[in-house]
Length: 356
Image (spheres, rainbow, N blue to C red):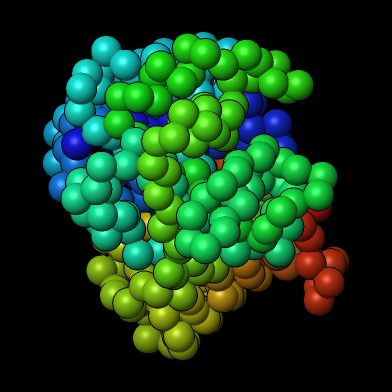
């Protein structure tokens, strides 16, 4: 089988972070969210992978993944340009996949438990499609499957009156019949080629469409609060390690992960789950609380930080309390600390200087 990672989309709900880079490179527990998709494909035995590029800084995607060798895969790049729907992106892969079955993985989805079981099921079947489904509280925000007696009978994209609470997770397994179905599509009311319409076409043709239910958890990371929640879920499942240097009176509790070259100075408290990248300086007199990810080459001096993603190359030199925030690269925050215990909440793009 081959793999396809969709790395496009405008990411409008995550601006200003997506003014300078694709949303799929925003880190979750110090790894780009799209890397979780690549690792899931690799762990399912899929190493021939195409990455579909959008219009927002595609060169950053290519710079990060290269030819895929450092991740144990072989990467091919396909340019989609302006987003015209998932089915349009899939159509562009026809030459890459040839006659092989393939997995399409939306790179802004994170799934606990991987996809190996689903891939093995599909290989052993004659189905034209297999889709991943998950029970959700807000099905009107997703593509939804109507399932009767264990079989899918209808799919609909973002219905006002959902027939079920089973949302389509952004993971699809296809055989080559999907390309014929896409060629027969007309744009939806969103002026996009909808993948739900393509799969429904195959259902109407009488072909088998299987489904697989998520057994762990799944997060669609389209909004800032979704990214923070995904970060919480991933951090909670890490195991503690310390590759850095701690001064004697540093206090730690919970899951604390510290990478090489990082120094934690006196009077600092680390309360996990949290992760701190390489070559950081934390302290003196700082507090890093639960559900925080701090990227490489970051200074945190005197601040209190909780439930926050700091994307790296940042300086937080402040006595203020920072909570529930997404902080882009190369940001400098300074201030005298007048907002404790309330805290400040930020969504900050790259190369920003803030004085509180």
